[in-house]
Amino acid sequence: MDQICVVTTVVDSRSVADLMAAAAVAGRLAACAQVGGQVDSTYWWRAGVETSTEWSVQFKTAPDRATALVGQIRANHPYEIPEILVTLVDSGDPAYAIWVHETTRT
Image 1 (cartoon, rainbow, N blue to C red):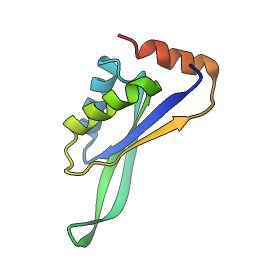
Image 2: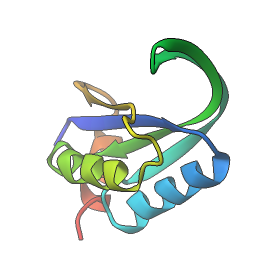
Image 3: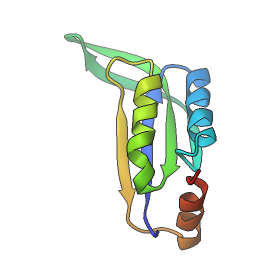
């Protein structure tokens, strides 16, 4: 129980970020979700370079809940090809990791 996952994505509006964060926590797929301020992203899309303003969302979850969380994010994401990154955190505060595990149980 000493490992957690941080799942991150970006979306094109604050309201969508807030809804995704709330849905993941309410569904016990994430113990918490943090919506970060605006970030400007530059990327290749459809044979050209684009720049857009996005909001980041970081979800803290247990490793055994990450696949279900990614599925929920993908199903509700407004992008055709969303950025969804899963990072396994090898160490951190043990009490926090226990809280994440306990909180993501239904």
